[in-house]
Image 1 (tube, rainbow, N blue to C red):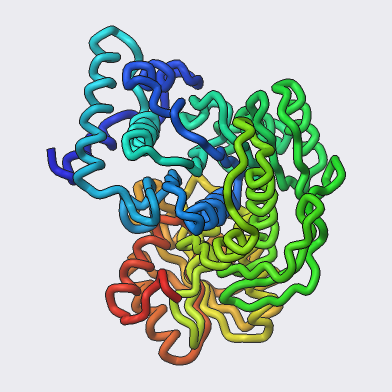
Image 2: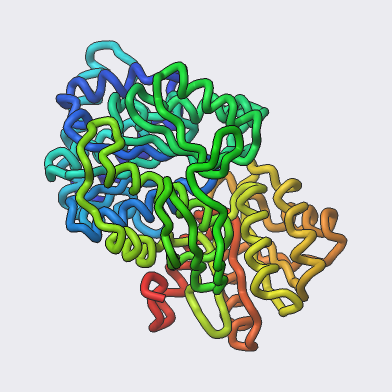
Length: 456
């Protein structure tokens, strides 16, 4: 089977099971020998920010020389981005070989009359099996959707668990209230594994604490929403679109001038989650009780070098061209806050493309402040995805929400051409919305420019 055939085989499995639960994943992993049980795992959930927290942790642990794995979703340009080890994506040949074993296990389940695994079950099993075979010393594991019934939650004893934020997204599956969504995400709590969270809504934070208490998990409240804060208010803030820096106390230790390669106050909060986790690990305050040999200098270096593609990503410096996967209201709010911080009164072209199952009207309301604070032009386009919101409908929604004209560019290739033209005129260009759009624009931009989107 080729790499392309393997990807098609992944997609042949259904997206969701007949009923929520971990029975399918548990059986699949049993057939494979439960490789996940040999791994030291840091489990990360949250509506927004979980991918960035994973990157901070992965970067810091890799600084030390640990054989560290990273499992995230979705990918930006290449499927192999989802499974990384020691700074490299899984080789295509390894993906094909490992997937074959998982496909065979799924076939055994089918032959036994059991419900077939979902696509995400299969891909998660591939990651676990690959990491175990490569003898990964740590795995930073990002949930796919929710937490309680997410395929990644088949693990029994993570070193730590982290919940980065709670906001409304995927409400048809996770619930309509923040408390319901928090309950789903708090399902990653495990006995003996400290739980770190950075949740601003008090009711949602209380749900998380209650679930942690039921499981016997010690809680560390980064923001001090319902418990004394384990991290101090950031001070000595320096804000640049290429990255922020700050000073903060974390678990009683003062981290002076933490430099980030990512921008936005939301990244400061994300990094404090990661710093708390790393401090606990170096002190041996984790499920296994084994201290991680990592110095605070290595932690600083890891935080500085971490990058999250497609999240306030600067792919051109002058004039700035920024890509951001703001695909829900909280993500859009964080993007607009950063743009107002750095580009007030500037001319901005915002190219926007979203999926039709997203709360588009709520996302557009977040643009009101940016429209008032800058010279904003909006262009509606479409991601290449069957769930895309047509550019004509998005443009009408923009006009209704902001009382302003909106350009219509049905093809992302047209949007890319417009971005290049505007950038050539010295305008600030921001591409936002669906990660399917971000991935296409990112790849197209990178192919035609000598600048590396990763190295900037």
